[in-house]
Amino acid sequence: MQLLRIAIDWTAFTPWHALAGGALIGLAAGMFALLNGRIAGISGIMGGLLRPARGDIGWRMAFLLGLVAAPLAFAGWGVLAPLQIDIGFAGVGAAGLLVGLGTRYGSGCTSGHGVCGVSRLSPRSIIATLAFMAAGFATVFVMRHLWR
Image 1: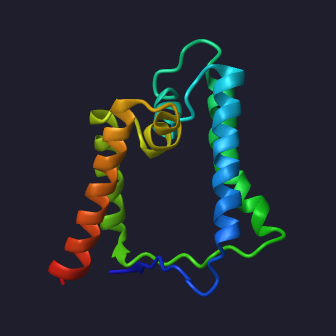
Image 2: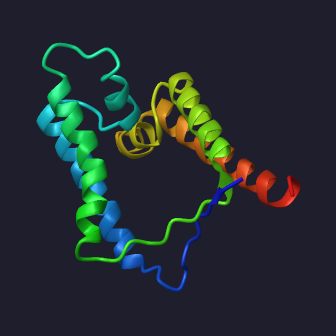
């Protein structure tokens, strides 16, 4: 079974890059809301392509293609972190399905609730984000300390 591996190179971590990235995400989400009147929630934008409304496909595709194109463009003049995930493709698929299921039950994803909802002080989004974080902490604890 082939494993992918994700690791963080803590020696290369710089808080300034993280701060700049967070500021850019916040600026983009704010501009998206101001200019389009919509929340920049990735699962909602992607889900809208499954049953698109008239005139909805173009901006949704542009948004999602930008998510893919941005790191590729950055790779042209910067260095991307190496991709390493300690799980097989079946595990990645199962994780993706669970995240997709969670976004349906939670009425949004981490970008919609965590970035846009928390910044608007939405109680529902704050609770959802706390639930995402708790589930993530519990999953890492179980997988790293109890499962092996």
